[in-house]
Image 1 (cartoon, rainbow, N blue to C red):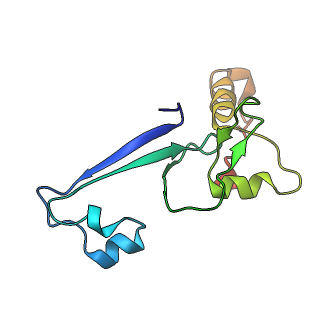
Image 2 (cartoon, rainbow, N blue to C red):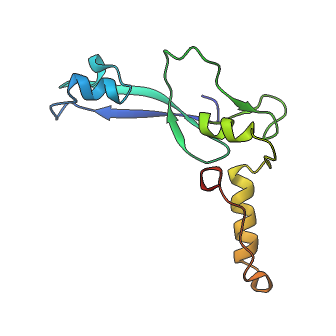
Length: 123
């Protein structure tokens, strides 16, 4: 399993499951979300905002990769972060850099009043 992938497992063996319309609205296969079923799906982890996305196997659009995060294979980024990345004036700030900057400011008493960069969804 690649380092940015995981797996979600939702166990409906002891529950009535999801109604078909609710499962479809959430993007799940209703056959896997009914009473007594176990829903298993791959997940992807965005390098820019740290969110976890449930992978849609029916997707035909290409998934976005950031070559600045890893210039060999690229790191997965979610659709909202890909949109923000394509805007003029974008400054590349992966989540790891945001955390490093935050810890640097929080750990240095001389830098009080200096705020770390904002996450993409906070812009």
